[in-house]
Image 1 (cartoon, one colour):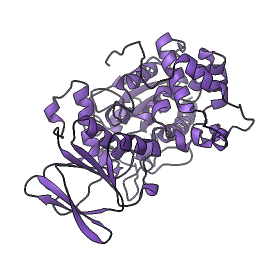
Image 2 (image 1 turned 30 degrees about the horizontal axis):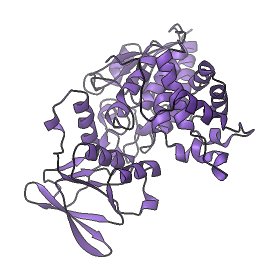
Image 3 (image 1 turned 45 degrees about the vertical axis):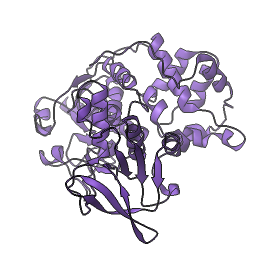
Image 4 (image 1 turned 90 degrees about the horizontal axis):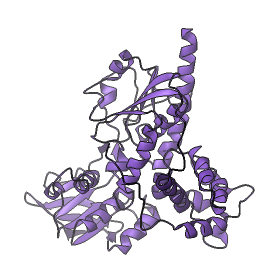
Length: 434
């Protein structure tokens, strides 16, 4: 993996004084609504209280009990809908900025090296994890701490999944992702990159290599398309592909001309989720002369977080609401987009169109093994007992590959429950072998 700098200096992070002053505002409610609003039930009042007293190590240890990715969660969780949105101070003043406090603690820990976790002997069992996104990293970290030998298989040249290749640098610095992965690696987790499960190795092969259980955390790797007249024209791309190529270019892996957007392009993004907002803001940074987000519903119905929408507005992104795309126009290259609004067909000039209309799981793993059932939309079907196991014995799944695409923290919540299911399953089969 790439080395990361020990010095953390992100412009929007709190200073020590700012973090402690913000922490002092917490009321330490008897029944903390913020904690109820957190999908992984972080002990929010406790870590904030320790921070308010300057006890950085204690605050970090409290976070470590529930999350393997605090620096990531602090930056990209939808706090306005979760912990911050539930804070009782919303009724009288500004809510406690829980995410920024979590981010501060994680960054401080990374810079000062507060915690060095003990490595548990790996004698409890052997588990393969497919995919190194938030679900895979959570399962790996949880099981490694419990004495499991965990190996992560990743298709890309570097682990991180959507955290590295799907969320742009301005929202989640890549050094932060690499730093969190190194912490999980330090628990004794092994990473095998450039390995495509379903092509280079199969689930059956893994069981032959004496893995006791396998976890599928591959997310929703395939972007949904928008089949309209003119879809075959060049200049119409997936927003996720654009974000991935920007990340690769910024990391020095590809030349700028491989980023599918020219400086000065008039750009339209179809869709209004967080991927659309990320693509819009990245397009501004890549030099688009204008960026417009088009959505078939209104602002009140958009899937994106309000904070991400506001950031896009602040950066000059335009929005067209209640607009239904009907046709891409032009010759070989797309030149315009016709859309229906107010019962009229209108047309907007465009050089690049990005589709951000959702995603779905790939079938590569399921199609190369037997016994893993999926529903009509391609999502893996799992059991309640042991939690997260597929219809194939010993194969588990969690995160977006099981549910519709969700947030990082919701994938982590599900993964933590699946890790408990894997642990109980492996323990049971070990007992049967005695």
